Length: 222
Length: 330
Image 1 (cartoon, each protein chain N blue to C red):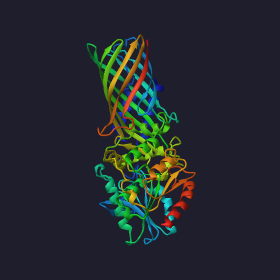
Image 2: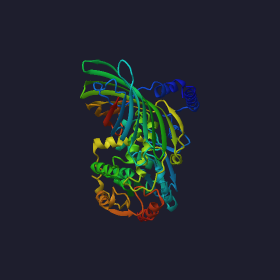
Image 3: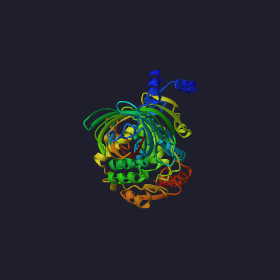
Image 4: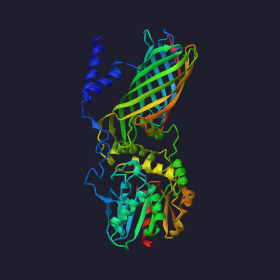
């Protein structure tokens, strides 16, 4: 693996501690609400359940950093999962319109009868929307890149072909996504809904599950 | 503070040491998928109909020819190698990986058509046929049985008999219905998750066929799942899947909605049609419906087996005597 790639991955994953996938109502998030716990269920390449934690930094404009763990459904719970570490920044507001971006470092695993994949990736997205204290509606556009992946094949695969184990590059995958997010807020609670479409990076094909959707709940604590 | 610094340093050092191994290219044949006949001249092959096919034969070239047609589209003939046994019983057994499948040459997606698959089969038969009087039989499994029927429908006089194992259908709507039934999984199942969750790890462009073939191979595990209605015994052997031809021929089917039955009434030769006991998506009723397109059918159930009835001992041992007896009577 090239040093520069390592540095990028490590920077994204460990050091910069950027984005977090919590969907936030920026108009309802108060400065003193430092801790945000979330729970969500939805479609994210599978039926997934995710839990997360976010921490709002003491800065002039809102920055929330945090981490998330998502696990898909299936008989073998835990063989596939996705973790995200990162943060999101609300860069500016014009009236009730707000613009934010997020950058996430991703570590995810996939396993079936033939292979175990461990992937380091990154997710970049921008959100622009209309935010009121009790509700919001926003559009998001993002890119999820599988930067480098380690392949470890099972004996079942090697009986067919001795596929080589190891780190593979260039990037093994990438998908764009775009959609809407909305939510209702009351006191320290948010109920979040979001949905959208996924398209692969060549803009010509789509994943088997070509859309995402999520219903989530945030609890904000001072 | 010093302890924290030490932990971070150790983590960083470990990360860099373990990531110093040489990285591999995902789209290079030989890494995740084997090379094709185009890339490896040591693989047995023939050149017909402007393509190069991975092919092998067993038995005497002057014996009646039995051409084995694998399923998919996009599988290969490795899982059907039990059929070599017919060579010991006086048949010239011909195996080939269809265009774009197995170890045969890959082509661009827009070049695939049903007609070109038929032309390839004509080319294979012509390549191996040693006399004009040599009989030619087809043995097709799943998609291979559909291909065999399309061929017989187009060239009924060219084929002296056929063994058809659970073809999806001969009319496009039947194919869609069968695929829908046999690929139906619970939304929360491990099988469906294994298929859909992979899309965030691996994506490939249409000209990156090594990536696409590898990804398709990984998804083949769905067929062997206990959640599958196919009733298979276990994983089928394969060399290399053909992702692009699979997608291409499915798109061709959706567009052209083929009907491969309109000339079958003229084919009065007895056809052996087999279905498996355990494939819940098939069964007697569907087998009767599909096989009724032929005027003269011997319908047989293979007990103790699923859709992969030709590949595992119980299914094969139940199938082989029936098939051999059928061929010997023609």
